[in-house]
Length: 133
Length: 133
DNA sequence: TATGCACCCTGTAGCAACTACAGGGTCAAG
DNA sequence: CTTGACCCTGTAGTTGCTACAGGGTGCATA
Image (cartoon, rainbow over all chains, first blue to last red; front, side):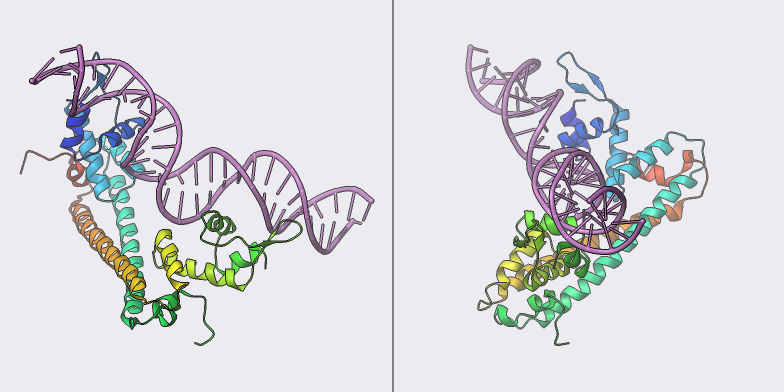
């Protein structure tokens, strides 16, 4: 299959497929006489794996590690589990950060009396440490 | 005050202060005879504003807009409110995305039986659409 | 006075993970 | 035989910084 077909099959941008090849995440495929990339089902499987992992928020480095591990089918999957757990902890941290932000932001918005900028509490809250409390 | 002092006062990296000046977020300050940047309290206020807004997750473009609005103290703060609400919606979307990710990831990890990679359900889940079920 | 050392300057390159060209070649249909 | 859709390479842009390299300045100490 050619690049446009594989890209479509995995909901990936064509340039992204070439990018994955360039950074060594996807092996270089065979070429046709006209120098077009020609992919097989193994490429498709690998790209699907990459996309699924990316969708779940793994970084490309983590994906690279997971791909490396998945090639050693006889080893313990403890390392795989460790990467996944590290990532889970990162997600939890991000969620906590965003929820803290959300709380402060929505409090600011709730205080807004829709007056002029001069007495806008959003602007005021963002300002430097105020002397008046 | 010099750049190191203002950076310290706002918990900002010195290079970041110069970066904000370069992209026009912070006005260029006066210079000493030795060509050192010399800041006043207005710069400090502005940088504090930028940092607070960044901490709350506003993009630099949003910060730029908020700063522009805060200069017109007689106008309605509806535009300010709109930016804040847009940002709140973005945060909510990110939280929802992360929570969906978290659910799928923790299910994957929960299924892991700590065997070999060959029957690792994490790797399997990441693989291409399986024929079995 | 010399000599460190900490600080300041400019300008450029790097990070993640792509995306968007520019400038060219190829292929199939009408 | 030309038109349009596709493919190629290579480079530059995105966001929000951070990290040099290669130089100048200011102050304390020997």
